[in-house]
Length: 405
Image (tube, rainbow, N blue to C red; front, top):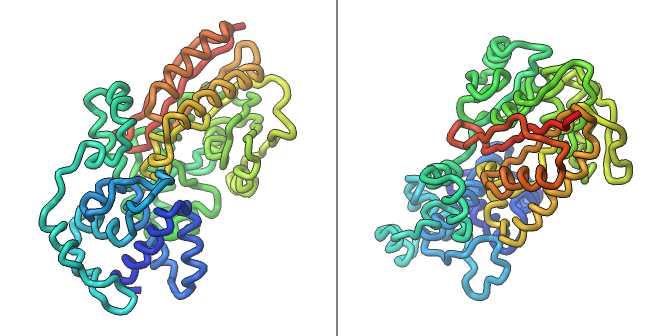
C-alpha cells in the first residue's frame, strides 16, 4: 500500500471508532475485509489510528472537525469524520497533507478550499484541546500534579517507548542486550529497574525474536518492573498476584525469587496466555484462582494491581482517556476499596499487602490507601512510591502495607 492509501484506510477506521466501535475491533474488522494489506501496512495503519486516538481533540481542532470525543455517544449532526481527524493529525505532526490527499486510486480526495483554509489558519486551542485531555480532568490533575500537569499530559500525547524485562533468573541484562543485538534490535539499560531495557525505535515483530520467544526477555514497561522491585520478596514465600491480568508482574516476581506463586483475576480469560509464558520462563504456577474458585489460605505477599482509570498508561491505551467519566471514576474507587478489603483477608499476620495502580490520580492512590487504613487497623504503610511518565515509563503508584503481627 502507498502512504496515501494507508492514510485513507486509517481515516475509514477512525470513522468506525467515531461511530462507537472499539479501536482494536475496528482494526481487526478492517484487516479481515482487506486481506491484501501486508503486516507492514497493518502496523502502519494501526500507528496512524492510535496517533489520532492519543491526540483526538487537537487533531479535530487542526482539521476543523467538531470538538467531540469518541465517548460522546450522542453525536447529533456534529460527529467528526476520519478524514478531518487524519488531516488535523498530519498537520500537527509536521506532514504535508497534500502529499496524502491526492485523489489517486485508494487515496483520499484532494483538499477542499475549506480544508486548505483551515491548514493556513491554525486554530487557537483551549488548554484541554492543546493537551488532549477531557476538560473535567484538568482541575483534578492540576491539584494532584501541580505545575508538572501540562508536561505530563504532553508526554501522554506521544507513543510510549518499547520496554522490556530481562528474566534475570536465566540471563543477565548485558547478555540480553547482546542477544537482542544479534537479532538486529538495539536496546539500552533503563534506570528505573535492574531488569529493564528500552528499545531504540519501534521494531516490528519483536515478540517473535528468539530471546522473547524463549522466555529470556518479556515485554513490560520499566515502571511496572520498578513496582515489583519494591516488593519484599524472599525464597519460599507464598505469593498471590490478586489482579493478575496477563501475569506480567507474576513473571517479574518470579525473576527475583523462587517462591510459590498463585494468580487470580476476576476475568480468568485475561490469564489465558500466562501458562505458556510461565513455561517458557521456567516459572511454575502453584495455583490459578477465579470467581468460581476464590483464593484460599494465608499468603506472605498479596499484590493487588487494581483496576483503575489507566491515566498513567494513556500512551498505550488512549481510548481510556476519552471513556473515563466522573461516574466511572467513582465506580472504580468503590471497586478498589472492595479489592483491598478482600486482599487484606488473604494476607497472613506479619505479611505484606501491596496495592498498585497505573493511575496518576490521588483519588485512586493515596486517598484509596488512607481510606483502607482507616477501615482496617491491622495494617500500616511501610513504603511506596509514585512513578511519573516523565521518568520514561508509565505512570504508576504502589503502596506497601504490612499486616501487624
